[in-house]
Length: 188
Image (cartoon, rainbow, N blue to C red; front, side, top):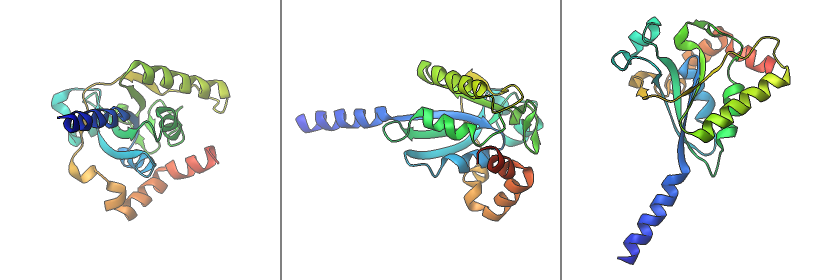
């Protein structure tokens, strides 16, 4: 019995460290590729958040009428990588001043957004946005929204790990959309 209690306690401690963060940064393929290689990140899912639950599929979301954003849900171990570090990765993979979407992808579904799941995430997200605004790095206002998380809808299987499964197409898309050059130029 003691062994079972000890195992349950150990399991609950290790599970407490696993958290999720949800970011909308335009095309979810690019955002998935930015977060997946990070030490402490166990999984990254492409999906949809923020809109009509009945329209949580690529066809409806890509129309721009579902109210959803394309997002990634990042599963991470807070003892290895902090939420603040994930925020830094997020900011360095988007154009935070674009109010109409990201790079070649325009529309509400491609706008930038940070969905917080608790008070700590909300405070950290707002503080990181303020730091970016105060830095005067950008001549335009930071357009990224910070919102309470809603239900996450996982995207279709062919979108998951797209950057790995379709590496050449993904690289062509990232380069052709302007994202790659913008990131290199802005965050060198």
